[in-house]
Length: 268
Ligand SMILES: C[S@@+](CC[C@H](N)C(=O)[O-])C[C@H]1O[C@@H](n2cnc3c(N)ncnc32)[C@H](O)[C@@H]1O
Picture 1: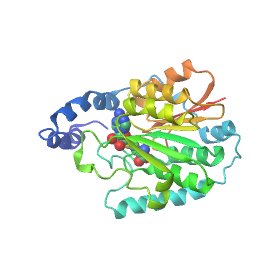
Picture 2 (picture 1 turned 90 degrees about the vertical axis):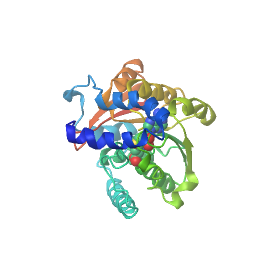
Picture 3 (picture 1 turned 90 degrees about the horizontal axis):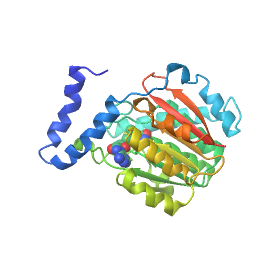
Picture 4 (picture 1 turned 120 degrees about the vertical axis):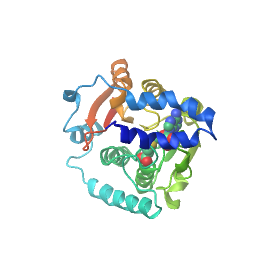
């Protein structure tokens, strides 16, 4: 909730960063403000309470899903690792940014395990919770590679160095971390990879950036490919994409904590 105490706590690192990095801070502020203060036209009724069962339907996977227990154990391990490193895990533990929550991780895990992707592309790493979940899934599948595009927190320099902290050495052999803004890095990378089987958006959650990333990924997605788009409550990027692309079947998810929202799009 936005109140004076929260605002002061969130602004403190920005004020500290400004004298040393004025250009970066000033450049990042408008978009950071947009993603915090934006709204969506998606209504409560649009969210699907049985989203997980319906996702499995779209993936042609069994329901109830036998994979859930394995993911819960993995998330516990990831939480312990981040706590041991002194970073914490969950909401707002990478500056204003949060680790992927349990619903997002569940959707990612099931997409990786059930579709056995060869090429996975994600934007937004931070602690690397989602990256770790993807990479553990690829290891179990014994196939596939992950490319992750990310910049370190543009407004909180105190958390720099924590990027990818959740990703173990064992997982890194299937991982390419691409440093830079998705608007610049994604077009050449998409061209280089040539095909994306699974795309995960968790970077800058503005209308323009989300829609841009989805269009980029869609341009190289074939039937059965999956997109998981985090934080769709602050803009209408996901909804506009869904209207433009009827070839994608969509599901709207309100996360367990009622704060987050995820868009799922599966190419038919
Ligand atoms: C919500 S966090 C990602 C959380 C991560 N998926 C996880 O599960 O731990 C968002 C990340 O995207 C990065 N980011 C912000 N704007 C970006 C941009 N334009 N391009 C790429 N990454 C960006 C942030 O610095 C941060 O590392």
